[in-house]
Length: 285
Image 1 (cartoon, rainbow, N blue to C red):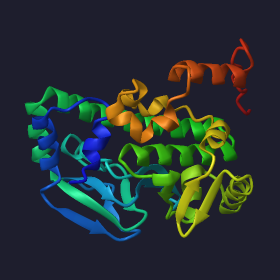
Image 2: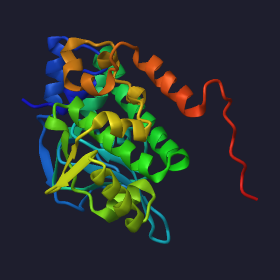
Image 3: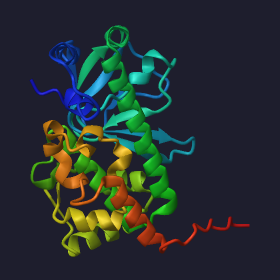
């Protein structure tokens, strides 16, 4: 049985057969399919079921009072859409299907029971939640500190790594159903600017886009443009080169001959100028 949640959580810890069986039980309670553009769960709602993306692509989004929409995360198979619902009274944002999407429906009571049964599974779910928060922080950095080309390249690199974690992304190709408007809402660019940046990446031979499938042709060059350092994804067992999981994504995140964070620090120093202190940007008056 394909269980993207188990494959994702395995990046954090090893599971014994009993724990793995327990994770498999979670996705057997039923499922529901959502059409492109349909809300999986809406702001202000609560539910007794937690939605786990099994297939497709979804997004978290916020809409301002004047109608402006901001996409704040993409949800790929293995991602829990609304695990916070059994703690918080209501969702504070929408989760929307970007393509036809299938979600397993996990009773919140099952998650509560699991949290009392297994410390290892509890820690794994906490890891997943913290990794989601880290992704949000990285998106904030992109919007505030990366130029348009780096911002788009970073999202593309991140998507590929996250798909590969759950056994997808073969040949460095991932589903790419987003319209220009949706991708604009994710990157903070106008549609015209986004189209120009995407065209540049294609012209430079970094990516190909055909039939709503994105192929990253040169991940190394694209990740350099993106300043993509995958440590924020906290792929613990891949970073330790654990063969049980590293074979799925290790070629994308493990530099040859140097440790992951040593490589990242070296790249950062080179970008800033060796030893040069960071200079805060002056605030506009």
